[in-house]
Amino acid sequence: MTNPILDVRDVSKTFTLHNIDGRTVSALNAVSFSLSPGEHVALAGSSGAGKSTLLRVLYRTYTAASGSINLTLASGNVVDLTKLTDREVVALRGRELGYVSQFLRAQPRRAVIDLVTRAGVSRGMNRSEARDAAALSLKRLDIAESLWDMHTAVLSGGEKQRVNIAAGLISPPRILLLDEPVSALDPENRERAIDLIADLSLQGTAVLAVFHDLDAISRLATRVIRMKRGSIVEDGPTADVFPHLQPAEVQI
Amino acid sequence: MNTVPTQEAGMNTLPTQEAGMNTVPTIHVADPVIQVRNLGKVYGSFTRDSILQTGPEFGTARDPRTGSIIAAWNVNFDVAAGEALGIVGESGSGKSTVLRCIAGDQPATTGDVRLACHDNGEFNILHLDPATRRRLRIDKLSVVYQDAAEGLALGVTAGGNIADPLTAAGWRHFGRIRERAADLLRRTEVPLDRMDDIVRTFSGGMRQRVQIARALANNPPILLLDEPTTGLDASVAAGVLDLIRRLLEELDLAVVVVSHDFAVIEMLTQRCIVMQHGRVVEDALTDQLLEDPQHPYSQKLVAAARA
Image (cartoon, rainbow over all chains, first blue to last red; front, side, top):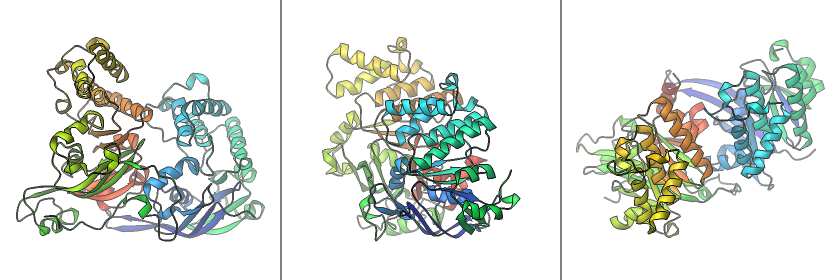
């Protein structure tokens, strides 16, 4: 087995709500696992199990309360994400680490092609390369060219999600976090998106993903991590974990 | 008064000094274009106790004994080319004070501010004589103010306002100055037929555009924006904000944006500091500040913006 690209040790996350009587909410408890290059691992568990929280902690949108998140960089050096400065995280987020949310959190008044091009630039492409790659990416997701110069706000839910995937998959980073990326897609577009996500593994990208359906998990994931109330309860090959998944853990 | 205590050296010291004990930093982070250390501004005379007994824990920036205002204290940050840092907080939190002390509009009480574009950051610009300080504003560091009257001569034409920093930078050829002014107005989407109109006759949004054009006249590496869209109608503010976003993406500027509006901060910045009662209470990635604010005050601000 290759060395892990991502090694998560005893990561916990607690939210302290200072303005609601200082109440604390525990969202992750001592989560540990690792991820190898080209591996596709699915996170499963009922809603509230901590899947999205985990992805956000790994992207550092949430700060971990304790534990370590070691990333092996392209240079071979290992860094602990929880100890990096904000400026280092900004630098890391381009080529090393990416995140595709369930919903397009598009900035207002941003044209489709512009949004995807920006994603390419943030991953180290120059503007014209990024523009070409964006066009290709949009075509592969079957976004009509007539939509490219429109603001993302006017798109349908499914179109937004496809634009989001187009931006997320452009010049893929070495680790990609996907949070229900195909939840709003019709069957045909969903197939297209799943094929593209499958290609990521061939390109060596390590993927950690939350999906809302068993079909996507069985087709994409080589390994499944089951979570319950903020903890990992099972971590193994898809074929082994699959029979244990409860209907509530995967919303069909 | 040089021995006033600085609080715990909380945030962003130079990256090489952080990154944990065991790991050598291996992520390339661009050198800062602007570096701010221990910046402080006090109105009135103050003592050690003035500092120790004001700030968020005391719910005030005002020293109860002397009446002095500790408008900003121990502010630290770095900004590199192509980066934008937000300073957020309520009115009176000290965020504009920080910007004005860096710009030289107000003398700072204490601190160290270095610009890579000025003698390679060898000298603290806060110690420069006023004339040298003013010259930085020609082509090193520009400011866009909330109130266009601060950044522009309202009784002068749009073209004249832009010509001003150009002539200060040594431009002499009238035709070339006109050409440059026209080019800047085009980029900031001001109709060229308004070039020779007095700025006072311009709408609020148009005045901001002229201010931006003027600020960019000599391609300064540093741009400071103080509530650039506050007070404009929503649709006009959106247009100005889009313009700023586009310029930030096209030009490799180091930018500091002061705003109480999280929509502005989210759109323009990657990192933020949050100020309350003259102190920095949190520094964060912008998405982290919005999704997982740590300090009680940040949580309150974010909750209010979301409501």
